[in-house]
Image (cartoon, rainbow, N blue to C red):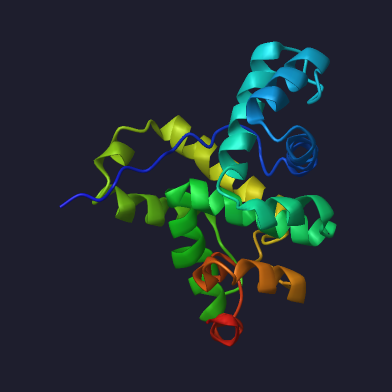
Amino acid sequence: MTQSRYNMSFTTGGLFLKESVRLTELFLQLEDWKLVKAKVLEENVLQTRKQSTTQRIYREITQRLRTLDTDEIEFLLLGTAKDQTCILWVAICRYYKFINDFAVEVLHERYVTRKTRIDNSDFDLFFSDKAEWHPELERIKPSTMQKLQQVLFRIMREAGLLSNENQIIPALLSKEFLTLLCQNDYKDLTVFPVFESVIEGNAK
């Protein structure tokens, strides 16, 4: 029996920290994503050369941001740079089930079992395993698969979870971030390289 389809459209860009914070600021001012989009296109807020690029990046970022509740959106604007990267990583994992599963089953699991790095082969193996349950993965071209791997690893690096040498970097989560995240679902913590004691200590 197959599971729900994976959305594999994360080939655009990376974490988009600066751009996400800017769009969040506009949303809290205008309180309407349609108004935000109009302003972004009219004033080239994202500073791209083509409007088609602006629309693509805007769509990618807002799809992620829409997974956050009001408190999380405000936290994204007011938090430290580290907190901002953490909340954006959570948003990405919420929107992309494939990335969520990779974060939980590879990034988190390798860390708690004292493994120190993630390689391309780990991605390939994960992808192959998931293809048995997700036939949509079997239709992805090798070149696209490579692009997906590159983007995912780039996002993890920009989120401060993976070094340039693919070493896993332990997530140092602030008290404020932990309090906020665990208001909804403490299981969101499993997308980070943290020990089970951190998760259990914040479970409610």
